[in-house]
Image 1 (cartoon, rainbow, N blue to C red):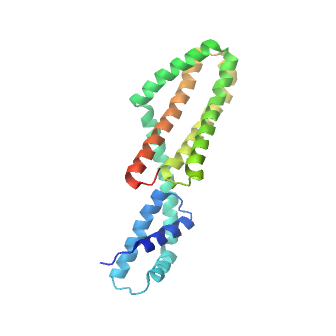
Image 2 (image 1 turned 30 degrees about the vertical axis):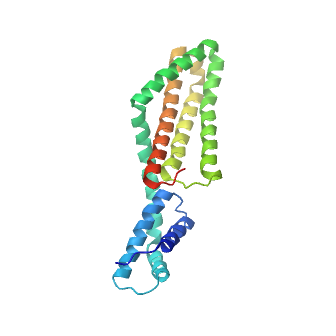
Image 3 (image 1 turned 90 degrees about the vertical axis):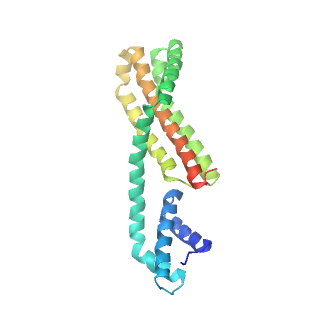
Length: 216
């Protein structure tokens, strides 16, 4: 049976990347799918060159492939949110919750209520900027392959960040009247969410290392 050579496989990959299929894991699946279909046409008796077959194939199927790309990304977002909530219930998150609460309690002893609230308000922003800098350095400067689940974790964190910030703004006056313990419990929940997002991200990177051998 006829198999496409590495140059032809690379051509398909480059074409899909130039068509804004940016994530390497999604693109790999599409390359396998396209290559398999073209090989089937050749083995069925199509004697044209690879490039002629590929051109006609993409004219007929490109719109469907790009639509599947968008659907895959949406499905990835839902999967990541479920993973984060599941991780929040793990023993690792429970252990982090206890350690984090002790740290916040010690911090609260040394700060008044107003300063404590100000510090808590900027905590998500500091984390967001730190993760953003790590992402920019890891994937942009080093120019490593982009993977859907890893990059979409930024979207999940972005939603959590705004939710936390919104609640903080709405309840600013209420926090001034709240017992300090309730304030610590609320902020600690936010820190556990951030910890769970980080833990899921590390696990995804490890998974991609095993499956794709492309993440440094």
